[in-house]
Image 1 (cartoon, rainbow, N blue to C red):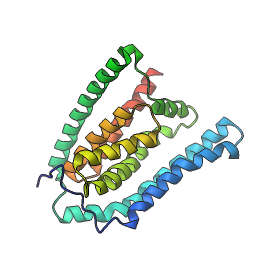
Image 2: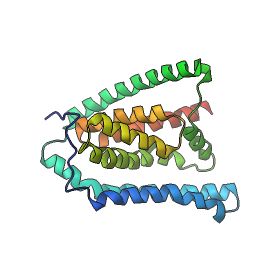
Image 3: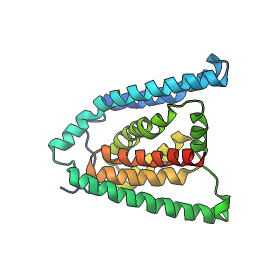
Length: 231
């Protein structure tokens, strides 16, 4: 069965409390580090504390989120909505092509708005994360692997998935993309919204959260690789 983009993501039951647990954990992960400036005296101590906090926190969030969302995956599998391995690989490859097409289009738009490719501003969020790597050696694991898993659980499965039960694919992807961008506090809104459309498209066609996770891991992996190659 090939899923239509506008086929609702009907969950196991109405909006369940179990969906709010990963959201709560994510908010705690994001908010608590702001207090580190009051708890630790030096930048190195704060960086070390942040590394442990993110490493353990994201790992716990991944495990807890998995068990919270598993009933939905079981429901889709029982209803025959999940794509098989061959179809999943096909849509991941299509998503990868869309990913590169969007990056090229985004670069052209940014160059046009900035008056030239040399005037394009860098991603503030990416720069901050890359600067932190020198203080937190294990941070790439969180950026490349744990972060994408948690964010796809939240922004694709929970937010986009629940919105799609009430709205069209376009508006569900748009709203989840805007929230996705807002949570990153970055100056690259178009990139986050565009990537959200690509990830949501692959998720809608496969009903497998592993598909957008793979694309998200690839995206973050390219960014980290480029950072180390440049340095």
